[in-house]
Image (tube, rainbow, N blue to C red):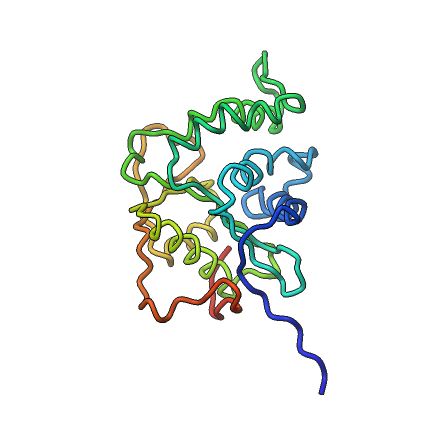
Length: 230
């Protein structure tokens, strides 16, 4: 009999996943597409949107393993945005400031805009989001999208938050990324109006996963099938 391809599984993040997680981030950071043309420095986007979560809150970092040990998707986040912002300021920025020093002039390129955001973590704290103390980032390589893995990753993260007593979670997404919005809508997220959101839309939902406890899958089991994005 021919050997079957290994099935993807969801598991906890490991330090050895750092490069693969960064690649997923870069490959999806331009409205869901590859961002290398927009941000030639391939360390920049992971430094904002993936690596700090894996470093500061690894217990809330999960990856989709392709079955051969390679991370092809991830969900990262925090259960306490205000606390995360404080640690980002005190612990993360000093780790990366040698590569990305605080800007002294207005940004002129997309990359410089991101460096400015790096040095302004307090932007994550908005009064309208106070009832949704957790936040997240989720990304999957295109070949692993629309196969149920995004939903499985999200449910894993929501369950971890719920088990910690965190009641609700939010995320910020680029408004123009309509496929991502459709994905979040299918997962029960709703829009949260905020003042002057810029190019972003903020979405939130309860951390309660609407499935019986006996239906929850261990992290070592294959992700369920179906459709979903990212």
